[in-house]
Image (cartoon, rainbow, N blue to C red; front, side):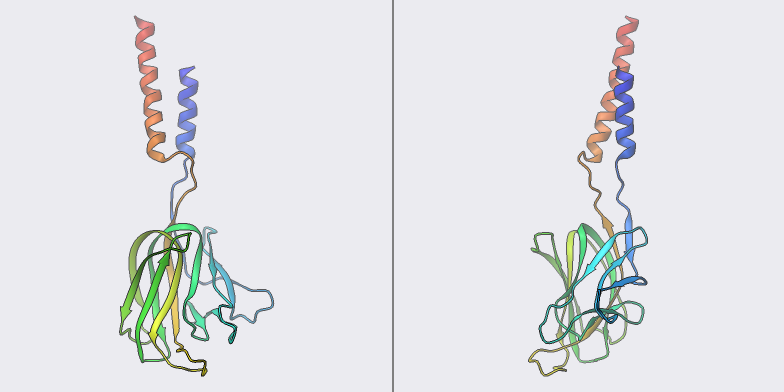
Length: 205
């Protein structure tokens, strides 16, 4: 009986999913139905993890994301465009740049959990135009990345500034969905081994 229990615990231990890092390089993206290649619905990592992209946040312009120069850019240069993960992840790093205009004061990236509560931010002051900035930020519990800026130009006469940002190489670690945490599984496995040891001693005596 104890051997059967131990075997079951071992199977459970081996079946515990391990969190692996994924990366979105934006080489392959899916276009929204009826779109013209500028409003991208999502991107998928090589291991099948989906990242959803914002679109249609503003009434005046059909904003969203489009593929441009080794990454994606916010169409119409709008504020607060965002990415959303399938669930909360650990965000490891990403690349970002300021495109086209050279009068941007700062780029701001805000991070939200799955209740859309702000959990942190990164600010890049006086970014060099068309120069990639690699941001390493090992931040847990990230569900949404929101991209904003200070500066830019009132390009469309809408009473707000506009600036194009490039984003690429979003590196993250997805949290595995498990009902029993791995340390507890290891503990149960150890208890099973100990139980067999005690049973053998009892049989000898």
